[in-house]
Image (cartoon, rainbow, N blue to C red; front, side, top):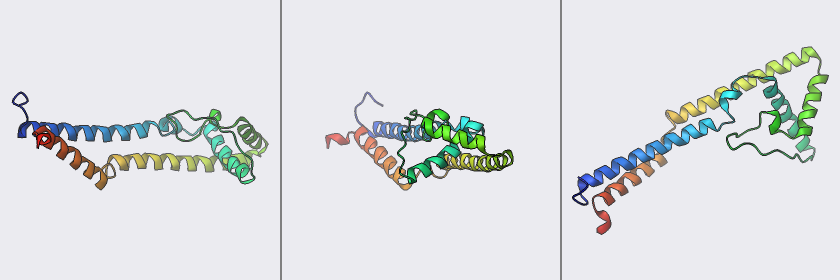
Length: 164
């Protein structure tokens, strides 16, 4: 098949390899997005630190609206959004912790429950997003065009089309 030079058989083999490469690449991208979403598995559990990140986010919005410029630490490459103490400016986190400590216990319970529901909704939305990419949204018309071009080009080159 391969030793006889370019032919329809080598073109078909090249097309199959091209299609497999495109599909594997697409699956790899989806998996990398899933792994890189702020460590979704660890963020799945609602902790005090995650709750404080929601408070710090709201405080950051207020400070930025007031013109205060925040010096954000750089996030790790595998994390898209801040959700740990180390991901926030120290003064912002300390102010959020002070606010929490000064908040009456009954209000803390209401705030914690509200952020827990918000967090569960955010995690569910992220999981739904990745499921939709893996299922119905994984292949768009644009993806089909790329597959058609890759398979067609590979077939043409494999059967000796470059010599024409």
